[in-house]
Image (cartoon, rainbow over all chains, first blue to last red; front, side, top):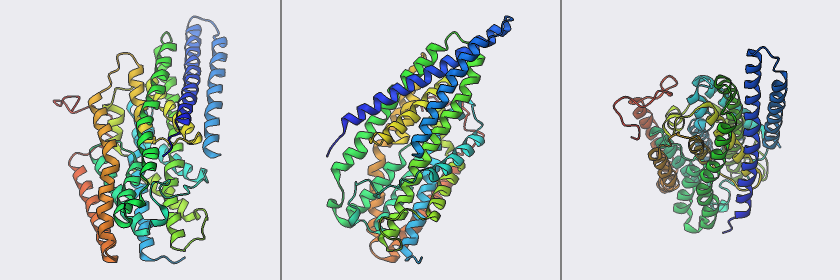
Length: 73
Length: 374
């Protein structure tokens, strides 16, 4: 019997890191969208927050794309 | 290709198991999306079904052994596989009836262990492997996913605390659909493969296929279709447990839970420490309950779930053992077990009609007058 604690620990660390990055990025994207809405409601353009949000969501999509690549490969 | 009767029976049983696997595990991917209203119940199961089918075709890596080394594959005959599948199917149906998400892989392992033990003796079972491949992952899966989802949920709420709440709800719905879809896809690649492996290895053992050959197209097609049909049927009872009874779920939590589940499943599959999809997803949901302040995790429900997990392997093993005992008596024994399996399945189906949970009622809360923890 051989229990690979090392790879279990690795799974925890990698999953934790990727979820921290993904959920944070997505949440910052949501904050960006929300700031854009507020800015527009106040008469501004809100294009800065929108650009930030788009970058965040694009990074998320890239990470998810890598996840799908992992499934297929 | 010509099949002996037993090979045909094994194929039918394997596809039946795949079908139960499908509706048993729909909840893993879609329970939280349905609970938060991100997807309508019917749409959710349809998306999940299609992605399971796609997943079945995506990966070419077929399970190289029937059981991952838990039983001695050289001592496994088609009759043992059949008996094991019957044990797995019966346990999947029982846990579905009472709405508990238990691992379909554990049911399959359990059934095979029981059948191999009875038919070939206890040395046909590798108990060290059982601890390594079943026990440790079963304990680790919910803990790992729970920790990850707790942190993910905490971050999501922390970062978006000052954002406009309607934007938050709307955007996380979209995020939730994406993350749930990823879980469905991962599930299709993992679980449909298992059935394909069982069928392929049976065909090889019976000489219908050359050794080391991959699954023929019809095997991929039928296995993918069986799991997709099962998924589309929707295991509403289990969806209700995971989406509603375990903890109340909001869209950001659902997003965090599904993202955590997808991340843990993918990393575990690729770093060589296989974890159970069901246990990971359940742990993710509990974690998302813990990560949101004031969200209450109903530990009574969680406890019942853990009990079902602990019972899955031995219970399926006992059914598998009895099935093997009778099946090995001769062809009539195999037919008898097959008929008994159909009768049990029918009985459970009829029992489920007395207290139906369907697409329309799945998001309803507990009936009035019943305590929440019941």
